[in-house]
Image (tube, rainbow, N blue to C red; front, side):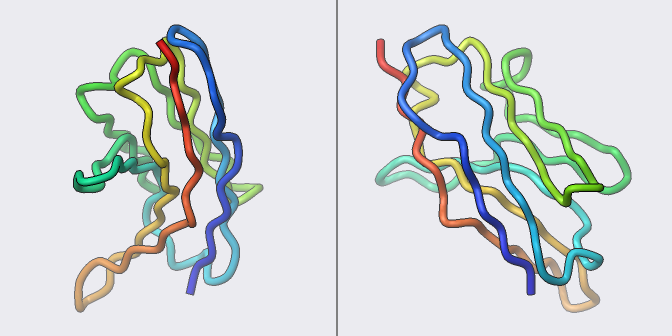
Length: 119
């Protein structure tokens, strides 16, 4: 099992910046990737940024050029630097870690942190 704890959400004006942090604990050696998803009421959770152990990084098209995901393996942490925030970025952001087993992908989730961008 992996436990994830996020921090860093809050209220920011459009054009501003926020940095989200997520610390992992538990069976950390089993993790194959870490990253961030977001969700708004009535919509599906969507991938924002993922950073695999092999160094592959993927971003949603909507955040490319504005958000930067990074990892600190020494601290078992993943970060999301969000710049140029827009009201459409308002959502609950969830830290994600996953492992690939023979039976498939196992996802772990944090409780989420709310990001609100005012216009």
